[in-house]
Amino acid sequence: MRIGFIGLGAMGAPMAARLVAAGHEVRGFDMRKAAVEALVAHGGHAAQSAQQAAEGCDLLWLMVVNGEQARAVLFGSEGGVAAMLPASAIVVAGCTQAPAQAKALASQLAESGVVMLDAPVSGGVAGAQAGALSVMCSGPQAALDAVRAAFDAVAKRVFHVGNEAGLGSTAKMVNQLLCGVHIAAAAEAMHVAERAGIPLPAMHEIISVSAGNSWMWGDRGPRMMQDDPPVTSAVDIFVKDLGIVLDQGKLARQGLPLAAAAMQMFLAASGLGHGMADDSQVIRAYRALNGDKKG
Image (cartoon, rainbow, N blue to C red):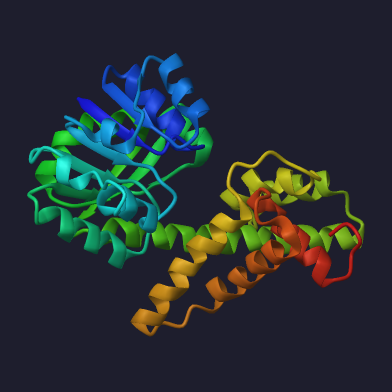
């Protein structure tokens, strides 16, 4: 397939490289020149603009930060690409966005005859590098069938959760609710052990083989022991994602107390100046709350 790929960040870059390795013709664009050059080094092609990436593509894959950026790429006043897409093109919205945003994008694209798949992903940078992501997709089955080979290049599992745009984003939202709560809970538990004087490596090993274990404990726990771990997902990503969860809860009149409590800890960490730190560093908010100098 001829694939235009916009957004070569921590997740997008390895995804685009996997698509190239699978034999697809990938033309990528990112605001960072180095990211585009890295794709070229993997055998992809450089686009000088979003418009150039979209020109003549069979599939336009958006791995931007959020729904606002996706809308700007497609319909922005400074040269949105939607009008230049071939009628047979399929847009894959891989960003994390509110369900209502996904529905609106799909509806506006449909006016020009272009189909959109609402298809956010999960699995982190490691999953993207290994081609082992989970794709939560909603949209027409025929469109999913048409791009299945591309999805299979980046994903171990592809879930079709419905025919309507917004359902894929809802599935991702539920996942992010659990991720945020699990990270905050892991940080709280780690901080309790830390203040009590239990060696953290020992505590981490105990929980890893006990009933309190979780995927986030296993993945984020080791980074909570580091003063400045590498950033795989920032604190402010969960400020955004839990914000989507809570906004949706407000619209649906659903009480979400655990998501709200986790949000407060991520907000506190961000307010302390750690918004761009790895999300495991929400533990710094617990340290600050309890007067620990390390926070």
